[in-house]
Image 1 (tube, one colour):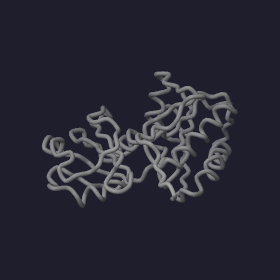
Image 2 (tube, rainbow, N blue to C red):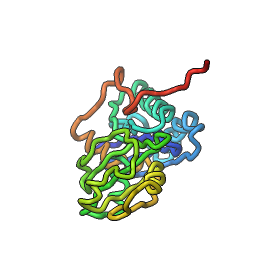
Image 3 (tube, rainbow, N blue to C red):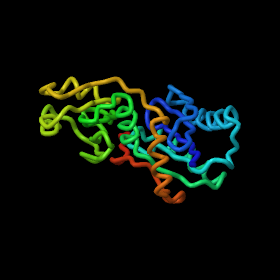
Image 4 (cartoon, rainbow, N blue to C red):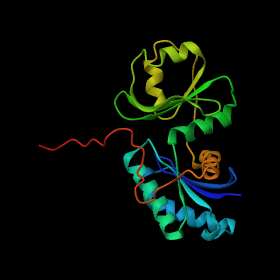
Length: 225
């Protein structure tokens, strides 16, 4: 039985969720990205206290490892690493896009469809991946510059759910809406629970010293003249 603390700060909404064997026990959410660094450790303390659990009882800590906001990912990974070092726990790194797909698959329960989480990467670019209902990768996580013909072949094949904060600009650009379903989705560390439990069972732990977030593309900062 694996008791896992799941942490997600990849987007503007951050959350901490405690799960046992893939089942969520409690989740706390912060919707202000600038407060992630201050709230995540407080959430951890609050959940453990309210559930009457000591950190020694935890089996692992999982973190939503990207893609997503550069700052957000650094906050989440730094928090998770710090707790792992202090409490001597293994670290699990879970794809943010796969976590999102897990959340929507559970919500809509459409076995025949594909699922395409999209995160805004500015301008006409999104971080995206494409998954079937069993979370098998149809297209791996990538930074895609959207064009009207993007995903044309995939949409011709079957129904696809598009969701996440990058999906609205894709909806405006889409040349043909056939087989495209746009749906609301709220990201949560709770959606990580089944994935972190599976990763724990497979002992897919990452190296604390060398692990870094899955940024997918280099950080860009305009240089002042």
